[in-house]
Length: 133
Image 1 (cartoon, rainbow, N blue to C red):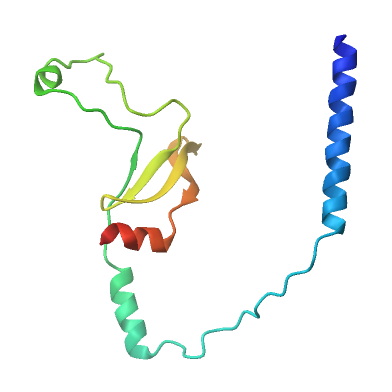
Image 2 (cartoon, rainbow, N blue to C red):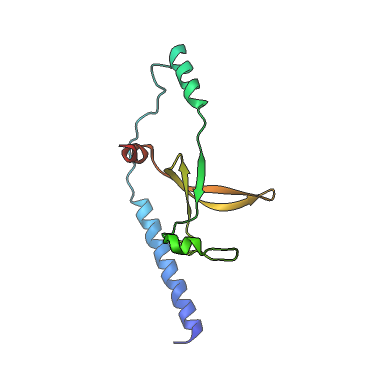
């Protein structure tokens, strides 16, 4: 089979997939969703004061590229130019930790000549609460 025939075959497959997807979407059934409503009990002045106190608590946020376990002997031998191999693959997302607790994953970005992190996956509140227990 020539390269041109392979390209045509790939196009045929793609068009078939597109037709199947269109057919599937035409046969889709509508789903009834609950109406979103605001909470019936707005927060009171006392609750707002307590929330404001919590919102002002400072936390430490850190980004972890990776980890490595080495012996003290190897640690003492490190000097300028030494390379420490980490447990992450190049291109893998970083861990975002708040006070040592994983809250998200992200990727490094540069903004105005400064490093930053773009969050790619935020750990759900339920998962974070489970890790606290």
